[in-house]
Amino acid sequence: MFVFRSPSSPKAAAFATLVLSSVLLAACSRPEPAPDPVRAVRTMVVQADTVGGERDFAAEVRARTESRLAFQVPGRLVRRMVDVGQTVKAGQPLAQIDPQDLRLAQSAAQAAVAAAEVNATQAAADLRRFRDLQAQGFISAAELQRRETTAQAAEAQLAQARAQAAVQGNQAGYGTLLAPAAGVVTATDAEPGTVLAAGQGVLRLAHAGPRDAVFSVPEDEVDGVRRLQGRTGALRVRGWGRDTDWPATVREVAAAADPATRTFLVKADLGAAPADLGQTATVALPLPPRDGLIRLPLSAVRELGGRTVVWQLDPQAMTVAAREIQVAGADGNLALVGGGLAPGAEVVTAGVHVLTDGQKVTRFVQAAAK
Image (cartoon, rainbow, N blue to C red):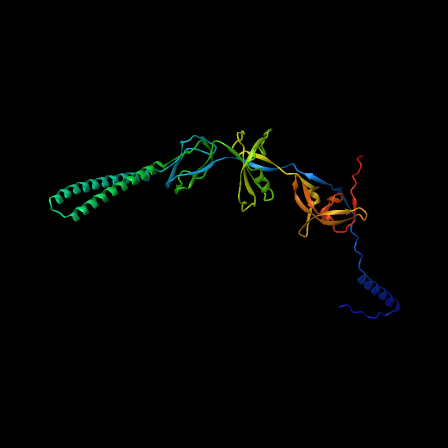
C-alpha cells in the first residue's frame, strides 16, 4: 500500500507534488493506436469469357476381365507354380494343395460304390427267388412286394454311391488350380503352407484381351461422362512417357459413388491401343463450353467466415472490400467464377491473406531493372 507523508520542507513538498502529478498523468493517458499500414497489392481487371477445353484425370490401365482364383475345396497349399507378372496359358497349373485327403475321400467313395453294388446284386437275386416262390404259392403277394421294395432301395443306394464317387473324383481333380484363360498374374494372396478354405483367394489373373483405362470423377462431372457413354473415341488417353494419344470410349460408369472418396469409377475401352497392364495414363475429358465465366488465379480466392470471397478494389477510395463469389470449377491453376463478380471489377490477386475489410491499399509497382 502506498502511504503519502507530508514533507518536512516547502521544496520537498513541491517536488513530491510534481512527481505525484506525473505519475497520475502517465496512468490516465493511453497511447493512440497505430494506423493500419497501407499495403501494396497486385490486382487485375476481370473479364467474362467462354470456358471450354478439357479436364485431365489420372487413370490406370487394367484388363477388361480380372479374376480372383481360388480352390473349390479346402486344403493346405503345398505349391505355387507362378509369381506376379508371369504370363500363363489357358489350362496351365498355377498352384496345388495337399492331395492326400482328397485321394482318401475318393477311395472311400469308390469303396461305398462297391458295397452298394454287392447289396444291389444280392437284393436282385433275392427278388428273383421270391418271385418263383410266390408263383408256387409258398409266399404271399405282400411279402413279394416287400422284397421288390428292398431291391429298389438297393438300386437307389447304388445310384447315390456312384454319384458321390463322381463328386469325390471331381474334387480330387480340384487339388490343382488351373488357369481359366490366358493372361498375366497380377497378385498372389497366399503362400505355400497356408491352410485355405474353399473359395479363399490364391491368385489374381488379368485375362489377355481388351484393356480399359480406369479413373474416378467427382460428382459434378459424372453427368457429363454419362452423356459420352458409348460414343466412339470420345476420350483421349495418353500413357505415361508416350508421345501419342489413344482414342477411348466410355464403357461403364459406376451407379453409386465410392463411400470413402465420393467419386464415381469410370471404365473407358482402349480398343487395340498398345497399353501395358498397370500403366499410368492421363484421360482428357472434353468440357462443354460455358459462357459468362470469369477466370481468376487461385491466389485471389480465400475462405472468410465460411464463405468463398475475393477482395475487390475501390479505385476511388483505394480500399478493398470482401465480395462473396460462386466457384463453378477449376481450369488448371485458375478458378472459374460463375457469380458474385461483374466484368470490369478490379480484384486483388496477391496479398489477400493480410487484408481486412475497408483497408487502404496501393497498387504494387514493379521496380525498374537497373
